[in-house]
Amino acid sequence: MEGTIASKRIEIRDLLQGQHTGAQVTAMGWVRNKRESKNVFFFTLNDGSCLQALQVVADPAQTPEEVLRKISVGAALAVSGQLVASQGKGQSVELQATDIRILGEADPEKYPLQPKKHSLEFLREIAHLRMRTNTFGAIFRIRHHLQFAIHQFFNERGFFNLHTPIITASDAEGAGEMFQVTTLDLKNPPRTPEGEIDYKQDFFERSTNLTVSGQLEGELGALALGKIYTFGPTFRAENSNTSRHLAEFWMIEPEMAFYELEDNMDLAEDMLKYVIRYALEHCAEDLEFLAQRAEEEEKQKPQQERSEMGLLQRLQFVLEHPFERLSYTEAIEILRNSQHNRKKKFQYLIEAWGTDLQSEHERYLVEKHFKKPVILYNYPAAIKSFYMRLNEDGKTVGAMDILFPGIGEIVGGSQREERYQELKERAKSMGIEEEAIAWYLETRQFGTVPHSGFGLGFERLMLFVTGMTNIRDVIAFPRFPGSAEF
Image 1 (spheres, rainbow, N blue to C red):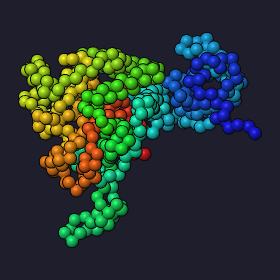
Image 2 (spheres, one colour):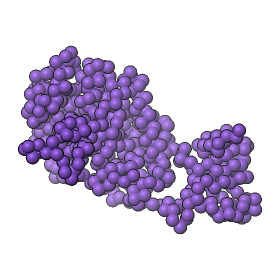
Image 3 (spheres, rainbow, N blue to C red):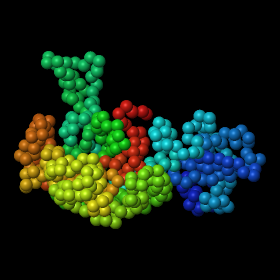
Image 4 (cartoon, rainbow, N blue to C red):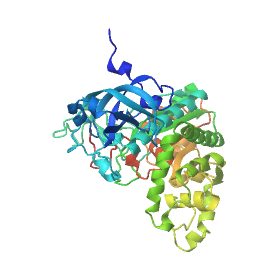
């Protein structure tokens, strides 16, 4: 019995390594471009396994005319022949075709990804095809490697991956900007005698929503298993139509029993360095391509807006420097006394302690003042969530944020409030009903321990590692106001 066509195929990344040179091989992929020269037909195939395409050389005299006619950009082919050392520039090997099979045609009059430069705005409009471009192929290969590195990092350190619920009745952030989940008839929902929607008749018999964070449930896992991490989708119904916001994104949220704030900071710094080092080691070709792309983009900007470092330099910058650690209070003093603040160059001027820092302030600390990544800790309690541990001063909490060049905050975390009475009072002061978090409060009554955790927005990490500037370009199918295609 003959094998399938896939069983005969060798991926292009393996063919380009050269160990198959001289052998009869079969490659499959999509045509990237084509040309004719001196009675020779050239075209390149890419199968997504790597950035580089494989050059194929065909003899028009030995290839049926109807096959040649169908070899167009975007068409899918299976090509068999001998892999030989290339005489031309730009590739080490090429495939001398003896048999070409058309797997799927692409009408050149209609196929939108012809071999020319396409704007990112245009490619967002054809998100169902954009992964076939070099840019998005590189981005999504890197996305895979970063996911793998994160799982590997935690696995090597004895963490357990926990799946926290996507449908939940809790609001971990107290944000109130949530997507509701219901099976009720929206045209005629059941009502209570008071005229309110009667959620008792809904599927879960209560009001539910898509999760904004798996943290609270993650803490339950840590208080039994010791160290857990979640890696899942989260949802925010913010009407923010910006290059930094998504309605659906992915979060990594580790929670650790017996960890205090400093342990939390150590783990987060180690994790970021680990995954960035992994990307540099395993995605060199794709990162080099994206670095060149970013460099070209920078040249289009006014001189004062250009980044001081290229993409690869920024990645090395994070690896080579211990992260600077300073309190929020120290940061406020630095910012308040800075020339930037005095000359009113900040859009949001720093005037007093208690101000919530903006991205421009965070980037100033990283890029101008310290010239290294920064971890800020001990923020004012008034601007942070109810579950963060109140410090002895009574006005700050054991929170920490990690700030990166070009992006600002990339990680947010804290030591969690493990004391029952303090947590109860803090939730009450922020308008959170005790009944809604009774299960959470109970963990502080039965064997409570100091514990900590943090959240890392995966797409934020992707922006940093790839050098892309719009968050919609680092997730395959972005969800944002007015857009829920596919």
